[in-house]
Amino acid sequence: MTKILVIEDEEPMRANIVEMLEIDGMEVMSAKNGRVGVQLAHEHLPELIICDIMMPELDGYGVLAELRQSTATATIPFIFLTARADRSDVRQGMDLGADDYLTKPFTRAELLKAVSTRLAKQATVAQKIQARLDELRGSIALALPHELRTPLVSILGFSEFLAEECASMQPQEIQEKAKMINNSAKRLHGLILNFVLYAELEIAVRDSAYAHALLGDEECQARPVIADAAIRQAQQAQREADLHVELEDAVIRMAEPNVQKIADELISNAFKFSKPGTPVNVTGSLADQGYTLSIQDRGRGMTAQQIADIGAYLQFERKRHEQQGQGLGLIIARRLVELKGGELRIESVPGQQTTVCVTWMDF
Image (cartoon, rainbow, N blue to C red; front, side, top):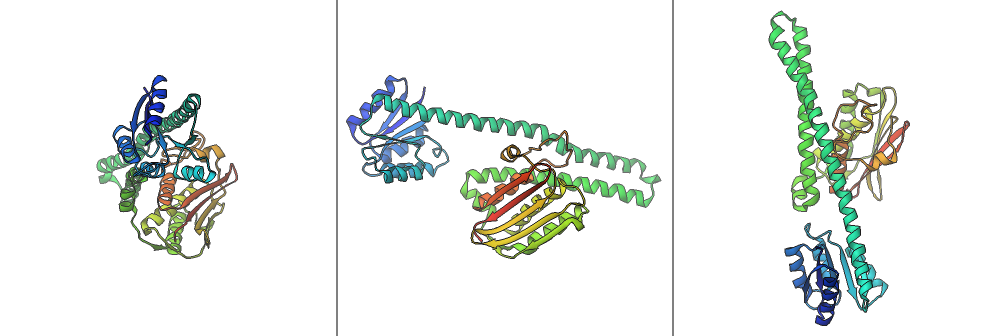
């Protein structure tokens, strides 16, 4: 049974709305003022709230503002009741996150239509979210074991070989096998760290206090951090000649390790998904809107749908393009940027080039 909360200070109006909704088979709670309404919303988490604007103690705008600040009640559909239909009133409510307006007086049909429309929209949103969660779970279930197993198999295989054959091996052979073990161990370590960081960032998205504790208020000089990351990734890809760096400097309001992480992941992808001999351009520029880091490669690119579908552990066309890595770096970079009020944009032409732009708004 659909649970609805009605917040209305005029008793006859409140009773009338409750009766109309109950006749339609809904479970209805009611509150005589905004303060009581906020309390009931937190206690019962209704599927929809209908709220008057002009009320004593706490008006409708105040009710909506308080509910939108709480994770538990932030997404509950909210319909305003008002005797005033002034455009500025409507705009104020919509700016706070209201979903609809009903102007008094209204008919039973108008009320039920507004309610059913909001509930249907919320159900559609919930279905899409569930589909994305199912996709994410499936992607993690398929990708994570494979990504962890690959370096682990190398570590076990080479270490076992060394243990059994070291007596008959030359020092150079032992050193080569030891390097292979070390490289695989580093890769496994990086995978685990990325997975832990991703989990922390997903918590931070929903908890501002946790986000502040995780990211802090530190600052860093952009140019040396990004330049070092670019050179390091080019060396690891053995493509120093393909790297082109042109960076203006600025102080970014983000801790240096996080700026480095963003640059490492995005520049690594640029080398990983483009061929040797093609350029990877890393530029940083200062403008009114903030500091923008742009990374461009001439690789395989992505379609608009692939860009829209970017998520954790998602690798596109894996059967055609075998690449190491769980596809988590891009989403980590995006989360880090967005949690600090910035923006990450991707522009791509399949088969030609990809440009990833990160803009720090607060610098």
